[in-house]
Image 1: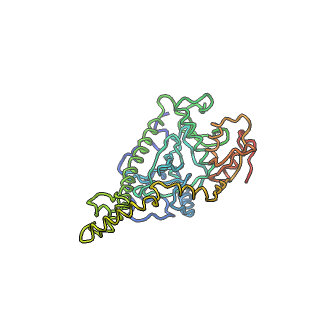
Image 2: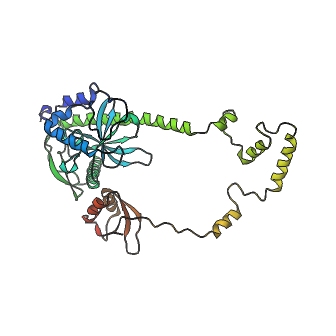
Image 3: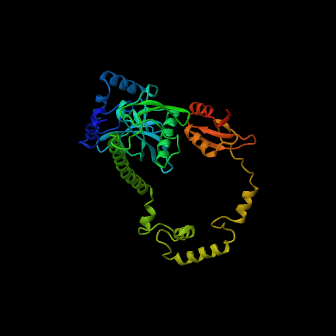
Amino acid sequence: MRPLDLWPPLAHIRSTLEGPPARRPAAGPAREDAGVDAGMPTSADLLLPLTELARRREALAARGFGARWAPGRLLSVLCEGRLLGVLLDRLLPDGRWQGWLAAGEADWAGAWDVLLEPQDEPFEPLFGVVQAWNPVTLVPAPPLCARVLGELSATRLAAIRAVADEWAAQRVGAPAGAVPATPPAPGQIALRDVAGCFTVLTGTPLAAEGDPRADYQVLYQQAARRLAQSAAPAALAGRTQARSAASPAGGQARNGGREDDAGPLGRFLRRLGGGGGFRGTWGPALAVLALVLVVQNAGLLPALHGSDDDAMRLRDAPPTAPAAPQADARVRWKPGTDMAEATRLLQTAGAQAVAGPDGQGRWSLRLLQPQDGLAVLRSSPLVEAVELP
């Protein structure tokens, strides 16, 4: 298939991602009920009839998503004057967010592009194709001008995670049957099963040679790299400034730029001598008195890292029983279940094990979305029973 047979043409997509940037949004806080900015590229006008585009954006504005970042939320973020879509997946321990780039060109979809469907509305149509093959990591920062333009259910997010896992598996040599056997057919989309429990709408695999979608994916991979690079320096600079502002400056000024590391005894002796130390008529006498007091009472002062008396008091204190972990469900696996498969199922269901197994072999779970997570667990062939606490 020739590149011009896919809509919009690759030249238009390239000009949108690499050409002159769109007009930057006006300064000031973004409205939470705002849709796509006036500076948004006009690709959506090429993909949908104007009446359908207006209907979807009116529904999006009426929904009025808040500005909070959360798993499953669809964002528009500003990168070099261009707005890109990102579906958030999870918050990493270092404060960064992991997700995938989102676009709107359904004709260019491959086997690991997930097309959002009517049950996912409202969402911005320009970001209706989640590129599970194109992960991105973001640092929340004001220059991103991020806005929430959609939110997927936990089940839908789990399905996209399953597609991303499938893409990652085929990169390292997936076992037979894990990769779709559909022949390459650019421009065609269809429903297919993923992970044995989800149905998603995707394109077909790319051909080994001559597939125009390969160039399309390169363009969006470069866009994802630019987005990650543009957000990181600004966020790191902001954190450095915050740490500098929070660090105490008074002690450094008093010590000629050095921290006050003399310890409690040094500070006590300085206070005895006044602001200038042991100077003046009473300075030597106070210094001798302080030294005598310290030596005589050394046995009464607690050690720096605690003492036997402290340990005795702690042993005498009544023990505090640890609070029982809160659980949304208890699950019992079928005999012979592989723990790797069970772990993948928990990730798919948005679940986290907080305790177990108990005497009956049940694991206590916390669920990101209890209703959707329970549905995923109950439909799995790995689970023997799901109980509510």
